[in-house]
Image (cartoon, rainbow, N blue to C red; front, side, top):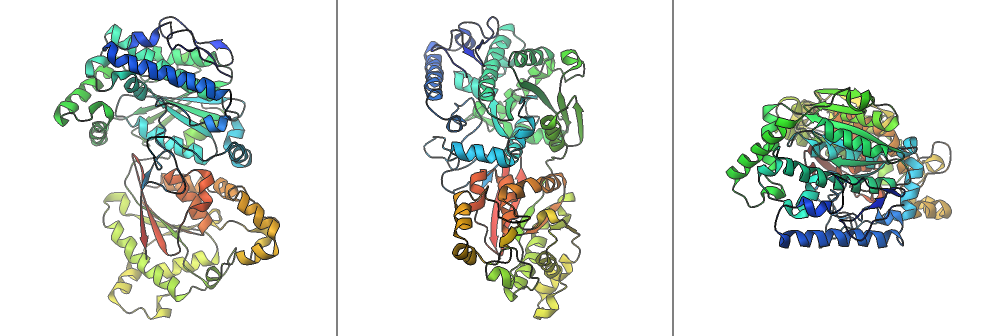
Length: 562
C-alpha cells in the first residue's frame, strides 16, 4: 500500500513503505521551490494538490481499488468517462466520453473489473511485473498520439492502463502559458522542470503499484536526456516489480511537423494567444529542447535499457531488449500504426431470412430484397467516399468472414447478384462497375460469435426454454459464454480479433468490413475506446454504415443509414 504525508513539501512515503528519494529532485519543500511565480498564484495550487493527496489517502482506506482506478487528479490524462450509453463522436484513448460538470465518472464495479481481467485480460501473461512506459521525444513529435493509441489498444486487450502527462502537472502547478524561457538550459529552470516531471513520475508509480494484475502506466514527458532517463530507471529499480520501457518518437518529415506545430498551438499553454506570437514562442521552445536532446542509445543503463524507437511513425521501428510478453506485444503493435488518412466502413451483413427471424448463428445465404438493395446503395456510397481521398487512401479492400451470408453480401456488393432483382438504372450500373474492382480477403476470425448448443435457435426460444442460460447472459453479457462445444463470449471474440485489429491498423488504404453484430461491436469498441462493459450494448442497426476516420485526436465516427 502507499501512504502520503499531509504536507506536499514534507517527506512522502509510498510504494511498499520505501521513502521517496530526497535531495535535488524530491527534497523537502520541493514543490514550493518549483514555482517561480507569485505566492498568490501558487498558494492555490499547493492547497489543491495537498487537498487531493489527503483525499486520496482517506479514500484508499475505505474504497475498493476499482473505484479508485480513475479517481486521479489532473495529473492524469483521463478527461471524462461514459455515463449511460452516450458517447462523443470523437474517441481516441478510451477517455473521450460524456462529461457532466467536469466530474469524472466510471460505471465499472470491482466485480466486473476482476472478472474482465480473469477471463480475457492479456495482463495475466505479465502479472509478475508492471510496465512503466516512458515517452521520449521533442515537442510536437507525436508522443501524445502514440500515448492515445497505446492506451486505447491496451485497454481493449485487457490491460489496466493509465497515462500521466508532465505538461498537465506543470499547468496545474500554475505554470501554464509561460514563455519559452522556462524551457531554456538555465540551471534554475531545468531544476524546476525536473521536479515537476518527477512529481508526475511518482504519481504514475503510486498508481502502478496499486494494480493487482499486469498493468501499464504511461509517463508522458520529453525525457530528452540520458541523465533524465537514467534517473527514471534508477527510481524504478527501487520499486519491486516495475519494468521501465522507453518509447522514443523521432520525426523529421517537414509536412508532418508543420501539421503537429499547428495542432500544438491549440493546447492550454497558448489559449487566447495571438497565433503568430504563439507559433514563434513554440518554435523557440522546440529549439531549446533540441540543444540538449539526446536520442536513446543501446549503451544506456549499462546496456540493459529497453526501448522502442519509432521514426516518422511507422516508417522505421527499432526494438532493443524488448523481452517478455508485454514489451514485445507493445513493440509489435507500434510497428503497425501510421497516420495516413483513410476510411474504415463497418457494415453488418445484408439481411437474410434468418436474421429477419432473429436466428442465432445464421447459415443462410439467401438475401432478402431489402438486403440486396442495401448492397447496391453501399457500393455507390463507398465509391463516393473514396473520391475524397488521394493516394493510398483511395485503394479499398473488402474484409469479411467465411460464413455463407458474408459471401452472399460481397457478391451483391460486387454486382454478381444484381441481375436477379432487375437492376437497370444508371445508379445501379455505376455501383456494379465500381464494386467489381474491390479485392476480397476472408477469414474465420470475422465470423459470428459462436452460440454453441444455442446455434440455430431464436432469442425468444432461448429466453423461453432455457431461462438459466438467458439469466446468465443478462447478468454479464460481456463475459457470458454460450454452453456447448465451441460456445463463445464477447471476451473470446475480442481475443480472436487481435490479428484483425493489427491488419486494420497496418493497411494504408480504406477498408470495408462485413461481419455479424457481435464482431462489429468489438471492432467499433476498439476504435472509439468504448469500455468493455458497454461493448455488448452498442447499438448498430442493420443496413447502417459506420464510417470510421482514424486521426491524431482519435476516431471520427459518421453514421449513415442506407
